[in-house]
Image (tube, rainbow, N blue to C red):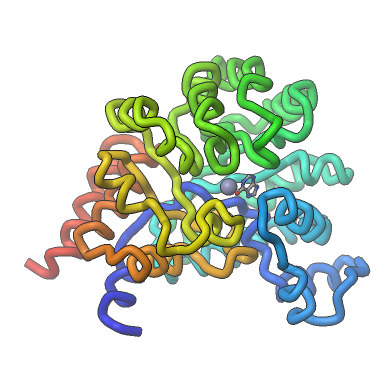
Length: 338
Ligand code: HPA
Ligand SMILES: [Zn+2]
C-alpha cells in the first residue's frame, strides 16, 4: 500500500449507497448454498466470478437476483451483513446506511421478519465489534408495480422504528419515479426519509420526478443530471447529496472508462457528491477501492478525498450532533495529532 492508499483506507467515511444483497461474495454464496442444501449452477468460486459478465444494469440485475436465492434464514442475513460490516470497517467506514430489497426475498417465500431480524442482528454485531453505526433503507423494486410496493410497505409497518427510510431501485428505464408517488407519500407520512436511484441509466427527467414527485432527501447515482445544466444548478443550490458509485458506473458502462468519470466535475459544479460501492461483490471493490479508482483516474488530491468523506457525513441521516462529531474526527485524522 502506498501513502495515498493508506490515507484513503484510514479516512473516516460513511457509506450511503450499498445494497446488502450486492455484498454477497461468491465464497459466502457457496457456504450458504451448502448450509441450506441448495444446488447452484457453479462448481467453484472461480466459475461464479466468471459468470459476472455484464455490461448494463439489467444483465447485472439478473445475476444479482439469482445470487440472492441462497439467502434463506435469519442466520444467512446476519452472516451477510456481518461480512459486509467487517469489510467496510477495514476500509474506514464508521457509519453505513444500507439498502435491502425485501421483495427479492418475500417473493421467494422468505418472511419479512426473517430478513429484518437477521440484518438487525448483523448491525448490532457491527456496533459491538467496530463501533460502526448503521441504518436500514428499504428499497422498492421498480420493475414491480406500485401495488406490490404498497404491500411491502404494509409488511414493513411493524418494523418502521428500525427503518430509516425508503428507496427505489432495480431496472430504471421504463420505470420512472412517477409510478411510486403513493407509496413514497405513505413513507413520508410515516416520518421516513426518502431516496431514489435516478439518472443512472434513466434520463434527467427521472431525477426531476424523484425530486418533485417523491420528495427525495438524497439522490442515488444522479450521473445524468450533468446533461441538464439547470437541474445541476438546482441540485447544487439545494445541497442535494448524490451517492455516486464509480466502479459500478464503470462495470455497468455508465462511464466508458474510469478516466471519463465525472466525480471531479461534480465537485467543481458544487454538487455534494459522495463515493460509495453499490454492489461491491459484483463490481470488483469496496468503498476504499472506489475512492482509489477515482483518485487514480481523475488525479484527485487529498483535499478532494476529504471533501468526499465530509460530504458522506453531511449527506447521512445522522442527527446534527453526530455529524459534527464525525466531522471533528475527520479533521483530526487529516491534521494529525495536535
Ligand atoms: O446499481 C443499481 N441500480 C439499480 N438497482 C440496483 N440494485 C442493486 N444495484 C442497483
Ligand atoms: Zn444502487
